[in-house]
Image 1 (cartoon, rainbow, N blue to C red):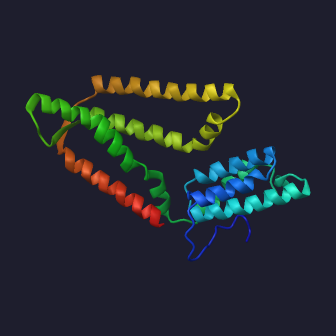
Image 2 (tube, rainbow, N blue to C red; image 1 turned 180 degrees about the horizontal axis):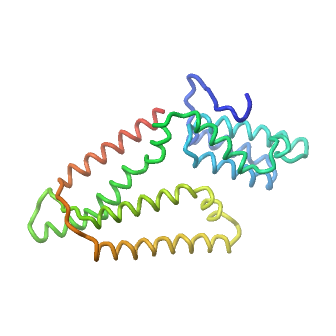
Image 3 (cartoon, rainbow, N blue to C red; image 1 turned 90 degrees about the vertical axis):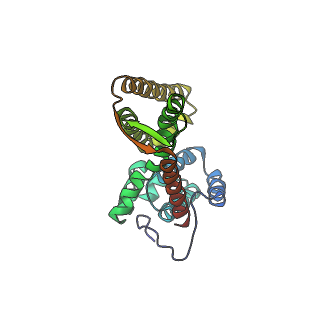
Length: 239
């Protein structure tokens, strides 16, 4: 099968995140030279963090590993057998071609799949939680929580930041795990600046832009989001 063609595995359910698959891939990778292991790690990270079907990613990685092993035996560069001079671009082209074959709704889902969990943990716990406690202190126990513009603005900012980090996850992972200490420090410093920026903006928003909007039942809100996250996880595991 050509390496650029998306895999079609009827009746096979192999999870790229399964322990057995990862162990098998690690064992095969150990047989490669250090230089080729570093190259293959780039392919592995891009595929694992890409929004695409796991079966397509597994087929691609297995095909690439076969090529890398063959290149090791022949004493040549894997790029020669793959017919490319840029492995990152080669992988991105494969991901792009796979995604173009998916339905529009499927591609949209992958872009927003993290939103329910963010709403549950950030908006539901860190934003509405303190507001709920303050409300209980002032008026006694109530199931209602006051929602203001500051909560929604900060949640929107969090969603934007998470989307940015997810889009750069492979590069961040490589930098964080790099043996170059200067690269490590630079990466952690950038993440620290991003965190400080968010805290600063969050404080400003809460101080000057928190206008009361409406009240909702806090426990029903959390329950709906929790059920949605559970169903989402079940569906993803089944697929």
